[in-house]
Each structure stands twice: as structure tokens, then as C-alpha cells.
Image (cartoon, rainbow, N blue to C red; front, side, top):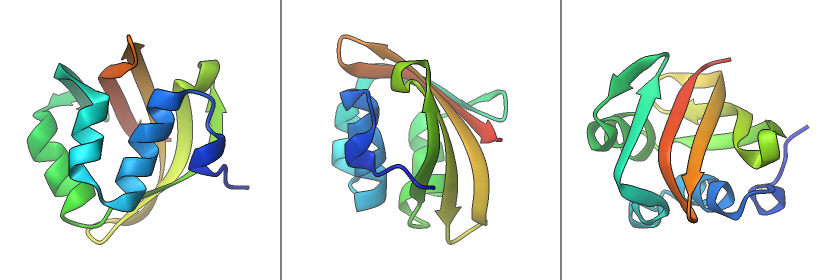
Length: 107
């Protein structure tokens, strides 16, 4: 069963998922702190290069399956034109209404 982004518990994570699904790069970046960091499968990546390559250029989309830890941990089916659909885990560090770090990888 998919959880609608509008039903996600944490408003910051909700905005993150909504921006991805809308293809709205500016809204996505607005949810992050200026010095936000991220990792993919345990390796730190250049955030801007990664989001362009994995999310925005190949039309990434998240279908959230579960949430935990107050909405700061998601399991989602992530789809993009490069890789197709993958079951992914997402963990968020939220500070003062902005995401300072997110970690993703195969679930």
C-alpha cells in the first residue's frame, strides 16, 4: 500500500517527497539546508550532481510504502528513467524545518 505524500507525518519530509514527485528542483533545494549532505548506498555523494543524475533529469518518482521514526525514515519504490523501479530506504536529519542530511540506498 502506498502512502500519499500529503499523509506523511513530517512536513519537511512531505515537502521533499512532493518536490521530487512534481519534478520541482527549486522546491526540493528549498527544503535543504545550504550545507546539506547525502549518501547513496553508504557512500557520500556530491548532492547537486546526484539529484540531477538520479532524480530530476531522469524524472524520479517516489511511492512511499512505509514511514517510521516520526516520518524521518521511509521505504519507497523509487522509479526513474535510468534504473526503472527500485525498493529504497531513505533516512532524514531534519534541523529547524530543513533537511541537513539524507541517506538513501536499496532496501
